[in-house]
Length: 558
Image 1 (cartoon, rainbow, N blue to C red):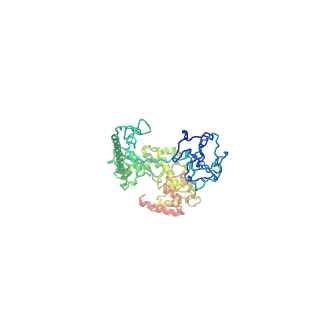
Image 2 (image 1 turned 180 degrees about the horizontal axis):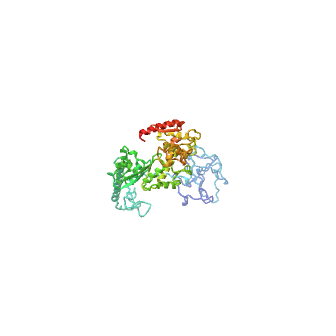
Image 3 (image 1 turned 90 degrees about the horizontal axis):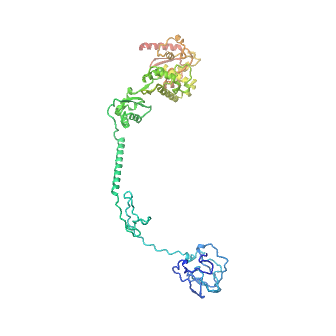
């Protein structure tokens, strides 16, 4: 099918054919007109072109078929011979409709005046756009009707405030029954439906109740916040009830942590009250860790006073330099156990109490835990087991020895292991009567351990080791000749070198002195009194110092 007709055949597609489309357009003249050929209709007569209506083309000119802007770039059809009218002017003042006029039977088809090819007058930038055929012309834009003034939108009813019906037209589900622009009538002219009574009153009541409840909640929590920040914390009154409870306070616990434990056990009513009372008490910051026996329902101020009283603190305090035998007896007493119970546990379970590898496997030891029951204060609750208390002590010793790094520093002092360093510290602890003498006493120990020294020939000769053997603590241990007769691996008057293990449980000061002895040539020392300890290099000088010491003992009545 061609662009303007049914086909290339002799049957034209008549413009009056209903299938043709619109019968004309504005300014269109009659399709059939009389031309200079008489009654013969000019199939090429066109409507006057805009801008070209007054132009006439003579026979010698070249003619062109109308240019279709939608077919730009398409070359002219080839294969159909074109004819021209020689010497005859051709009217181009009308549109080419693309329709072929009916010709009488046997008449010759007129020559095509566009057969000759020439320049395209529409291809220049100055040319008007080519005319469009009637089937491709755009219709004149219709005048836009005047817009109606928008009416005030009808107040929208939320389903929450209505009964759930939205008054829609039953006939069409897509169109609302009450148009917002139609004054309440449907678009199809239906009568507006009567709205059902809404439930705004009930809904507003519900909203009011919700808002009132929310305001009450905000007020309550706001009051609680104000009370917590600015108001007095709730507190009990008095010294408490007759019911008691044991509360264990861990090491390093602060005020709020202590208060939380007390609140949990019913001692005080609130954390805020206890912290406030602790801050008001000048000694409140001196509360120590341990197990406290306290009454329930105490005022915060009473609880602070009770925790500052040592009588209420169920703690086991181990002094520096005490032997393991003394500590075992104290644990038995604290736990109300039969004497000797803790010692039996220590001997039987020593390997399970947390000793490091370098502290095990030593022969001839009198006590496997000596040196590892670190002097400190330990919380001991009623009903606790001896092994639990011993584990706490060993764990504390491991922690303190790790801080001092005795494993690394022992070799730099000529010792074989940290076990020997701990043994030196235990000797310093019991031989040095006063801490300010510990550094020099430590030097005496290391000097006597030298095998080539001419004073003691490698023997320590300390009275403290004799007391350890006899489980005594006295100054009159006997003569040197008698002491050398004691057959015991801990007898330093007989053996050379260190004892098999520590003879006490030293504190931090003694261990530090064992790690850092004061340089000096001393082999002997004696403490005359608390403020005077004399050190000597030779035995003769030492004997003179001992005489002075005996005189001081007589004066003091010892």
